[in-house]
Image (tube, rainbow, N blue to C red; front, top):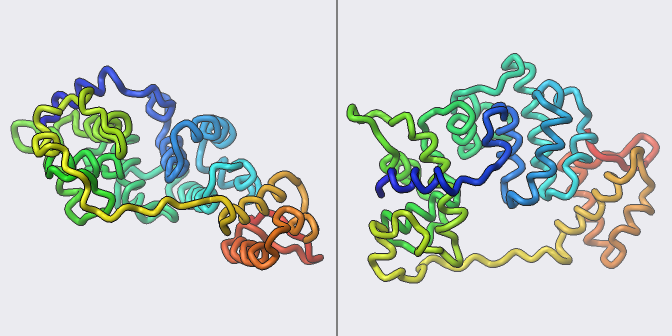
Length: 292
């Protein structure tokens, strides 16, 4: 896979996302990475802007209550991400002098930060030439390099594959453009080499793509079941959290019962899971409030 055409394509088609701008700090980029997990860019833009204004540094968020952070998370979904980010902010403020680390290993030691997020922050915030692999990158590599239609399953070789195609200097070391290439590869997967309707006619490397050369064979990987949302425990949890987010103080159990009346057993199960996760707390007088 030639990196040059991809970088040239990115120069023209890169989306103007606020966390990519020069004024975005490593902390702002870390917030974006937490929010973008399993959530489309369009839903993240508004909340991200509100968060970086309200909590411009880790210490600012660390000083906030867990309830305030959960309330600000709103309807982004998977609210434990907000809880983990709050814990992460406390760790950065206390152990790293309020500065997000620039080293992958140090980032991995932060609570709530996994392999992808650590590499993304090191690469996109600090320009470290480390491979960054998400679903989009994995799919582009599977098609362009290996002739496979999909790569829904992570493989141990993913990082090696990404490193092998990154631009290098004459001495074999990563080129200065390697971090930008990581972002370009991700953008190509998000905008052109998409999962369902790839736009091969707009692809800058269509002439060297192994999948196109093979006739675009269909995927041989098992189809993922589409996760429904309506009627699930996840929806029930969301409804209960909505009640608590809309109130500044604790609420009675009756208010939670009214939020999910159809299935008392499911409602109880959802509430128990929220209590176990620490997203909801019971006060001494038996009322319910957001955790933290």
